[in-house]
Length: 135
Image (cartoon, rainbow, N blue to C red; front, side, top):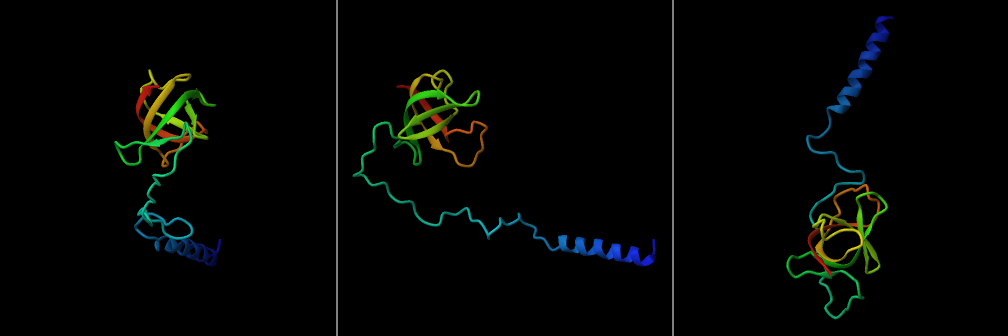
């Protein structure tokens, strides 16, 4: 192997390493620009003159963002997963008292939608149950 080959190889390695050194100290930006965690607008108020169809989720006055769902708990397609179909939507029930939230039970659950998790259940919108009562 000649000196010329060693020099060219070394230059290539140094060039690659110098490209890595130009990174930033913060987390990488997602493709397509920067991402902000701040809301871009104010939430729309819920119109009070609209009525929800029977079985639809209702807002809870206890905490903003909470919903109350009523219906029958069903087993999901994966073992250990429980779902509820109500208001034309399917919810994946997470948490809650297992003596109350069980397959076949008619329940009323209060909680909130969860968007920042992944589940193996592959069914329904994740819904973190904070309260559960027999219906």
